[in-house]
Length: 271
Image 1: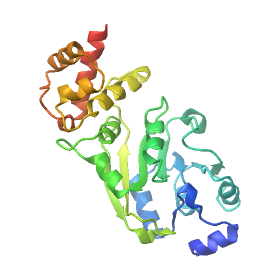
Image 2: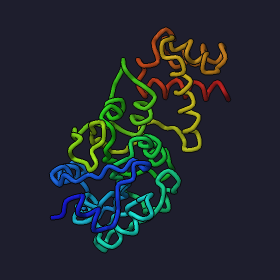
Image 3: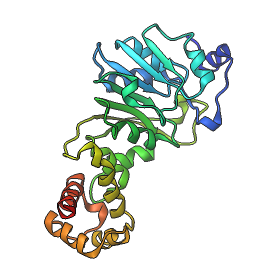
Image 4: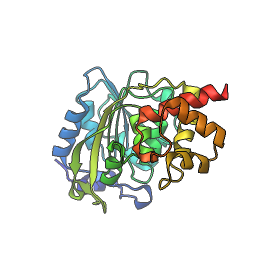
């Protein structure tokens, strides 16, 4: 069983700091990630950030198809020489690809995400018209904790994630599980994707625009935050009244259902 250094050497590669490459090498962690993902044998998995292919190989043993997305063209080309036949390695940027072109529905998302673009990638897939059935992903520990927080400590990221399901932290992972080790600890988050709120695909951007407006001034009350976010006094007061939400509450005290109620009220007013 080769070490990460040996595999990198065999592939003629080095970790690229500019791409945030920290390669997972702890096979015990790999097994635990697969257990958390709880994938079906006939599943199609879209894997983002296959790295040295260690998790990719474990996924390929468990599911029918793995579509591995690797931005680094050199690494993608090298991976194609070592992965099993049921793995399709694509040299694409996960931030620029179309989820509908990657895999038929349903599919499951498994990812070791570059920390600097992790939330942007997740939002791209979750907010798309072709979202995954489940997500199992590794991010910076502090980011994972922000995703799963509840009132009275909500934030924009928590609303964005919990709109699509109920994320939970399944594993905590130390720096030593990677080569080279990152400066921060990591966590694996798992969620079954389920949109419980009836926001049409075409109106998702408007929903999250409202949430951003609400968090535009976190130290202010919800009413004042929405005003700072650009909404008119009449619109804000009408929305709060119809949604039956006290405008003196802080934005971080609202859960996703509250934001949905505000959005529905705003849509009624706009008509």
